[in-house]
Image (cartoon, rainbow, N blue to C red):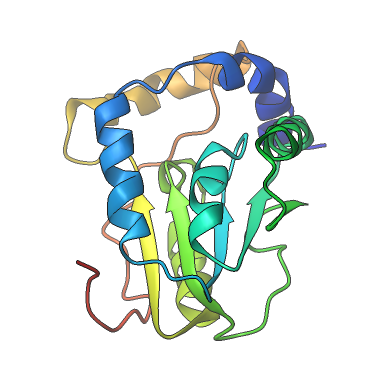
Length: 186
């Protein structure tokens, strides 16, 4: 097991008990995303964590594939889905890059609070663009560290990693054109 998996496995239980930091904003994002959904959609969420967002969206789509690298996070997600009576989510251990899916096979891809944790954001965005059907929707919400004071967190990252207190955090340059085309949802 690599270090990112170890970190997220270690914090999974505590993470699952932590309240959303801004519940109103979270509810707004859920509602906005659901406005783009329909009952026939196949959705992929990468970096699904403990499955909370996938469980909220499940009643609005045909199926969700939810991917996370942490087995402990996924165990919690599976338990939460079962307790909620949600059966249209399949949880997969691994990364988006490891998830085997055909090109143009997903109606929607969700990458929420994850892009700043990925070492190669451009490769991830390129895969998202490849697996989305023409006219598909990519929804992302992540910390924009590059132009904020939070960008200095990278100075603390080596110490935080050494003490196993934080995951890798990446502040990439401006992303390259990953091939997305289309319009925004309402």
